Image 1 (spheres, helix red, strand yellow):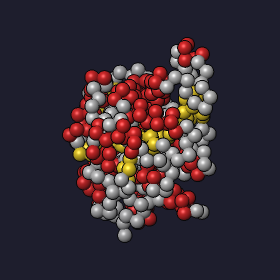
Image 2: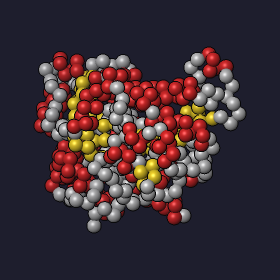
Image 3: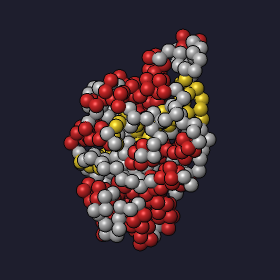
Image 4: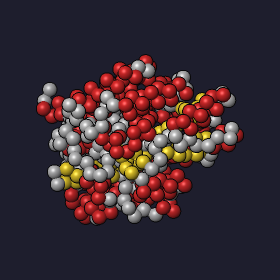
Length: 444
Ligand code: GAL
């Protein structure tokens, strides 16, 4: 195995992350799914008849295939095609939330010398450890300067997309991973209020269960969804500072707070749908929409799913114990070395970071702008609330979505969680988590 391969597989070099967040990597090494590379259909008759000029193609790789995710992406493609007439846009997607299948396919393509023109990658460790320090990306300093991106993104965000004095990807958004989504009609009909604490959560869960309603919808056919739930439980069990300390070696993985979090998680899992391992995150949300389940704990791409499915009775609150803490991640796109259409890719990156691009994309995607100058009036009620929270909350990095830890470390945690959701063995899981930190060379 070459040095570069080894680094890609096990890369654990920690990027210094500013006050903000974002690092490490989603679940890796999932079975590779077949990518789809269907050209995006033009949306107007004029575009439909305009034959793409020879060689004028843009291939964008992502895992945005669900209703809300795809809506945001296709909106960007529409604007891109207006701005770049005659360029054929190839929508290369690999289904699977959080990139659970896409990341393996991307790795195969990148290592095989067949990079897409631009690809979705989480800000932080996932970008820097996996693709930048290994030498697979082009720096984007020219674009950041010409488009003024170095002035319109918050400093914390600019720091995280930088390494070695260069900018490496353009952030499209900021997502929040630690949200509880509930069916307002179900809650109203049963006189329930959104839980704030874990005690509240279990009281509400009991009440729903007594009515024959699944309390908590979970869809962890990709284990990342349980890891997403677990990170909210870690945050709720120990608070922002200690949670951040888990990723720097300051907080002991063998300590009482992690044990407590595992106990709480185990109890929560007794309230989930029995078919959770067969469902995706959006199928779990569908249970809430249908009133078959009361709540789901998931990132705010659920807002986009609700919008796409025209579900108007969604209530939201921070996950239990997470009030005032924004568990953040960002989808970014970069320019791989060897991209076949670098000029088209640069035009894509300029659009992605522009005010018009971010204001068109994010209201559909369930995320807020990474830029600081978007107009809140263009966003729905949840996202307007999220913008306020982003400005006032303590920000922590998401584990399941590439921000908190290196890719190898997240894979180890995924494996611990895969066993834990089945066997509920707290002591074994805690030992496994502590070992994962040691293997990542963050804990001794
Ligand atoms: C996250 C990604 C979001 C959303 C979600 C579910 O990792 O950042 O944009 O797509 O997965 O697929």
